[in-house]
Length: 125
Image (cartoon, rainbow, N blue to C red):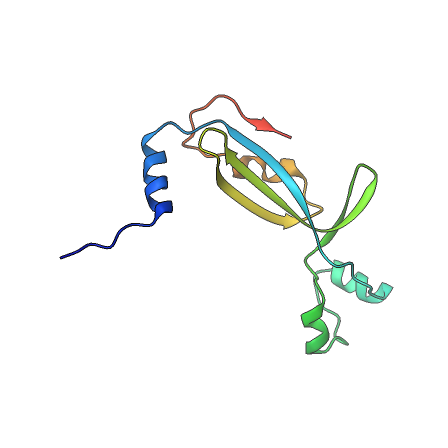
């Protein structure tokens, strides 16, 4: 019986389990989302975590109620933040977490660390 060839990624992952993990590089990038043009009452309702009753299905589909505002270097940004842990030695993304832009990097920092990594060094921005 002929066994199917494992994918290249599966082979790479198996090889990385045998070798020592590299130092983790932790960083985050902002991902822009279209700015919402909501009325004040609508914005307040969205901040409470609900969707305004007046929004019909087609309008709800076009509104991004999960994206949030943040400031970076004095400039406002609306959208999401992609937090990533990259293995320095193997150049592979080990973990990726996507949050709204208002979430601080320190909130997800420990979730990005691999408990199996014995490296004492962690590089973070």
